[in-house]
Length: 192
Ligand code: GLN
Image (cartoon, rainbow, N blue to C red; front, side, top):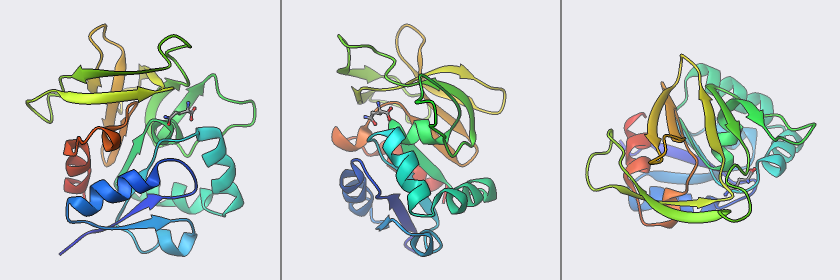
């Protein structure tokens, strides 16, 4: 059976995620309304701007339905701003910014500062095996603290954590959807 998966399409690079998921054989659909969320078995929250995604999810009446599905155990994969949305705690957030939560981690927004705002690097990711993941970081967050319920999936050479998983929730600081890397999406689809 082809799994029906949603990509939160309020803002950000949702089209790239839809293309990767469709390429992997999933029935991938954009989600902007609660009734669309009801019809999917899993969800990707794309990169973009977490403050805007937060505001729009409230304006579209999606915040509570999203939180309910996360608590119910729906598989969710967040990239960059999507990881921020899934995090229980955020540093350098706007004063009124809220997240959906679910991942027992603390992330810091825009953690790489101006000089290294955006960069690409190769990451060894044990759960995905060889070859290394070519990862693009774009004004990316860092996972500064990993609580006992979450586990580290990938870290930079200096030990800074950039991918985490907790049950059916997966988050990466970087954007596999723009570098031709499909293994994180495959890993997510296996959770369905
Ligand atoms: N800096 C953005 C934020 O705080 C995330 C950037 C991205 O998703 N590429 O939401």
